[in-house]
Image (cartoon, rainbow over all chains, first blue to last red; front, top):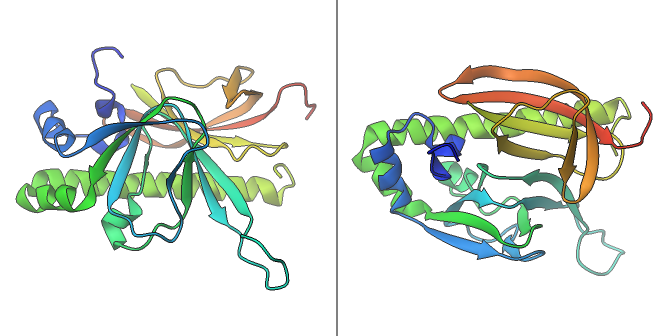
Length: 161
Length: 67
């Protein structure tokens, strides 16, 4: 990858030096998933942030249970996230429960998983890393919101389903 | 430069994707998302570049679909 590590290619690490990226990378571990495997469930406690190194994941939200219809709520896919993307970062900011379910959609998808508490401890101990990581998390959330707004705008024109 | 691309699909059921890639998407180019083929019909700069990242949006439609 042109001399870059896969983690360096993620926006989460933008602006960090190689040494700073290494310090963050030391906090986590790489985990491989297979097709259809659920990685996180909507509503559950959130303790990690994930970076997609290879493959693709699908983010789904429940459309709400209908009182007269038995069975689990319908799950609606809202976006696929490929290499370099992060998810679970909302928990880094608000410590809330998972807002969506995320599942693997490509065999051999590899994720870098970083425990939230360890990442926050590093941010507290090194404010420069903390500033850059939080700036990058905010930027990524903003990008996702812009993506979502564009999709809604195109839906409004009847251009997507 | 790394290109962070927001792909929105018009028509069909694909929810779209966000992907980092080495080259920018081009209008008329075909891409594959989870085995489905799409044609890129529009590319815009979503945000000014920062650090080594460029932020783009691409609108796509299923291959073979007329506008």
